Image (cartoon, rainbow, N blue to C red):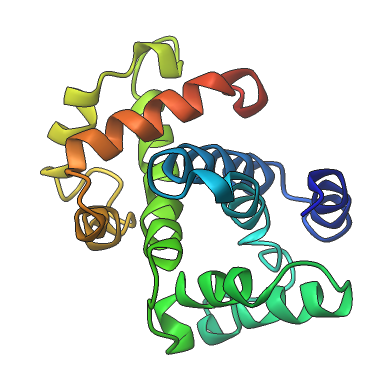
Length: 187
């Protein structure tokens, strides 16, 4: 899969700055998870993370949550980009589609999607608003505070444990991946 082509597609369909940053963050986390779980699929996992929310500026989540994911897959099929595993992971990352998680790839994307926003929320409570200030302990502590980042799907984040990765380790992997691209994320 060609990342440059993926970036062109991303720029064509996604225009909201925070959503673009989120996609870069999920790409970074997915690459890090692939390094651990599927080293021969780092690019596929990363590009899927990059494009997983491609339809976010096109679909009204509140009105039609079930369209988030299927619209992305429709666009990618029209562009002749990606493969069936990628499409399955994108569809399964949104429970409203009714598509079940069937693989480690699906599970990784389902968990990676919300943790990036959660880690961003943790960073934003620090005075410098930088990822370098965030500690894994802060992430795990905030997970127990249900009013903090209340919209974050904690069940999805914790589901990484189905892949044999304890949550604290997942938080570390995710934080390190996001910190490596902190300049791109503005954090």
